[in-house]
Length: 211
Image 1 (cartoon, rainbow, N blue to C red):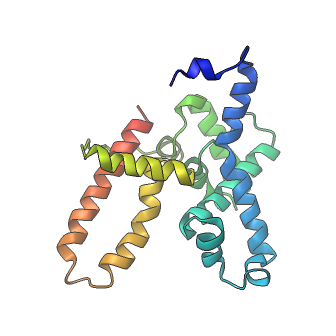
Image 2: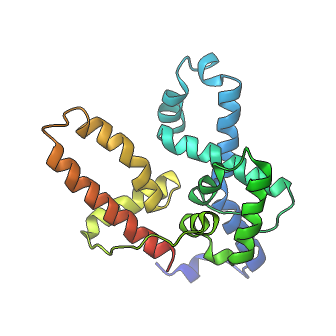
């Protein structure tokens, strides 16, 4: 398809940039709505279900992802209301900062340090952790895997508003709980193989995000 033929008239590039950034922050509004649902017990009063079931059956996302969006929205809101112009723009970046949010002095000091050390295009959860904790980034291992697997991961990640690495990490806990932990002896070898495969995929995506 000729994409140029689908665009009528002149393109307002400022508006395009605005829409791109706005779309990137969808997790903030979703996270804030989830906070409201949980705070007012809407999941119980309206749907008569646990918050975990509400996430899966109503929102269509797994529980871990919803919790991460809630954490991310709180971090983003705290920084934006403080008046910062440079702000994190992914769930993973915000979650990295969340552990410090109850210590206001440390929380804002960390963000000052990050914005001093990094340009906005260099932002990543790995870079944040390296700066905050004063450690070297973890070394990465490159892995190749079938294109059909990559396509499935990519499409699923896009559908739920995550990066591939965020998707893999969110799947990790539930996968082993359901498949491996139920029969630990029988699945010991499978556990070791899957842990290695997932670790390599995560490492590869980390490398891509930070390249």
